[in-house]
Image (cartoon, rainbow, N blue to C red):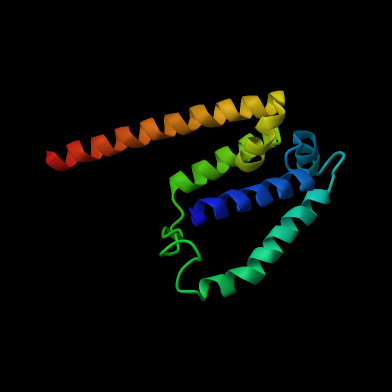
Length: 148
């Protein structure tokens, strides 16, 4: 129960940071990405602050044997750059550039019922479903090849 409460409170803090930083406003994000037009550099300070805090805190956190409310850390194990990573990164960047939203801010912006957030949320849901279907099909094909 403590871990659920901690996750909820940290989610609220993250939500507040996204909203206060302007990350839930697609126009502000698009203005940040528009380096040849009316560029708005303010989101660089938001990202810089986040990266700075993470860079300073991460080494201290990882010195612990385990997180406060979990038995072990859940860190990525993959270290290779493959087609799936490159494709996913390209799709993420394309979606961010076209809509001005990425998944975290889009979820926060859904509560405003902003049309861009609703469209992004729908596209993200459909994309996640398609990805899951493709992965299951690939796994099934791999199992069939191993049997042959």
